[in-house]
Image (cartoon, rainbow, N blue to C red; front, top):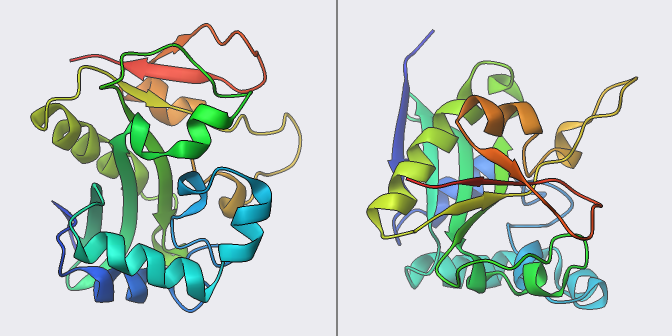
Length: 189
């Protein structure tokens, strides 16, 4: 198997992201814009082409912090991370509302190409993304994993924020969540 290489997303990388995400924009036309829109109604109105254009503009403007994973020249993974305050939906979410240092960063999205799943790509992306965040001055990093069901499988489209085991393996620790609905994990340098 070709070794995995990782690097930060650059303003010129939108064509790489398009190739990785495919015509559906990763999942249901998301284009990694879900956490930028404060309400479900705005999200429904934006998904698809409008989200693609908005994300392309953010990438070109250097406003997206993310890590890309490649096997050879083929993009196989993406991890979005950035200052928590950049993701307005987090502030409005009752399930994820959390008192945190305003400079805290958040991991909000993973996309692993179907041919690269279950090969450690998410673990490698998370390690590189957290290193990128700490190098940029993040005092802490939060994550909001989805807990897999006790029976059955959790589809990849529903695990876009990762699962607890991913964060636990990277040294993140579960923190109290007053809303108690979703777990919140945190890592400090």
